[in-house]
Length: 316
Image (cartoon, rainbow, N blue to C red; front, side, top):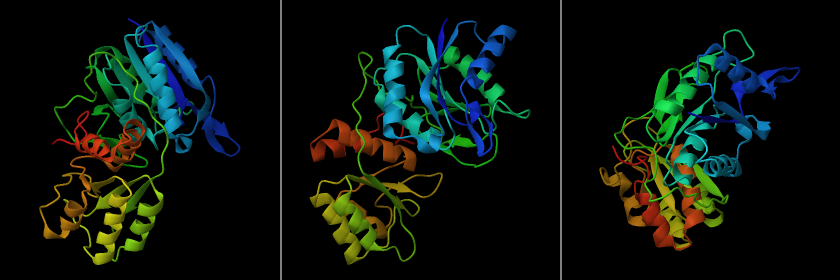
């Protein structure tokens, strides 16, 4: 059984430079070769480096698409895929792959490391072994294998900036893939999407500006879906609606999700047609708006797409 490892950069493949750690070609390739030679992983692993290697802080939607296109291109040649990726935006890429590959018929395992393979106390070796094993044993879908845990790709988030088990994901029985009769590649074009966090004394002028200049908005609300209801905030939400700018409301809480309508303070969201993000992470909400805008020109179709659970990102 054959595995394609797609190396994009990130800490796992970095080496020390005068300016700090930076991606270096050959680091991941050498590690995989050593693992195969030792018999710790399958003997048929091909490494494809996506140049230029980047720190994931530099990742863009075009990088998500580049990875998805590679998986789609080689879907019939390999039994599983591993994507090595930087941790800072790994959750965005995992979410994007869930949405980009309807009908996915292979396991796709996204992994990385908090410490480079080039240092003595690296966690990269263990993560690589686990990911390469999961590529042949996991259920079909997009998963994140990190710190000894296999996590749902559509619900994962980075929860710690330094711990070796830096990622978490709310549990669900849903599979991290979109069902389709045959493998497809969803279109994706970058759009201007704002992520705004509601705070005490939140300035509705910020939301109004985003409604006037952005293509979509992720609004990080309090708790289960409350905002500081005011005439200016309602006017900004109406402006977004009038301009056909989708607004997805997600919770600032790491667990529990949204339930718009639980409190009267969420009525402005409901009245404006803001999408109840349910269990959606802010990362997934940002990614999903990008796909909604890329796939649907009609506002109502975008709203339906955003409100529908595609791959386990919304439902409990």
